[in-house]
Image 1: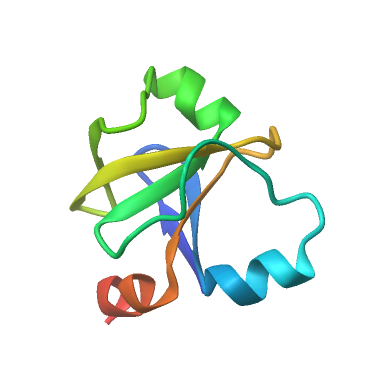
Image 2: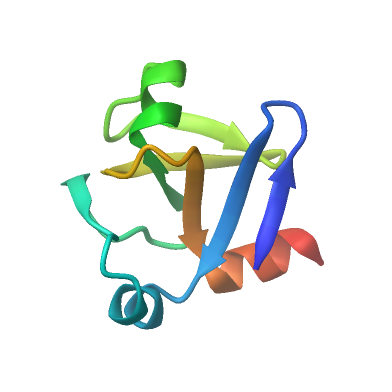
Length: 90
């Protein structure tokens, strides 16, 4: 599921981590770990722009989330659990 964060021009993907990881050879968590429902992974571009460190609290899609980890890819994407994306999208 793809959600758009218009305030920051960020695409936020709701993923099923196990399935996504099985299909995506380039998905590599460089720092931190798999996100819980109230957490988000961000790539190196977003983390650098927002000066994020694991454990920081951020707001995406009008929801407070914890930064769980850094996904190394340089594609300006953010990921959090699929069910959380469904709840946010309604």
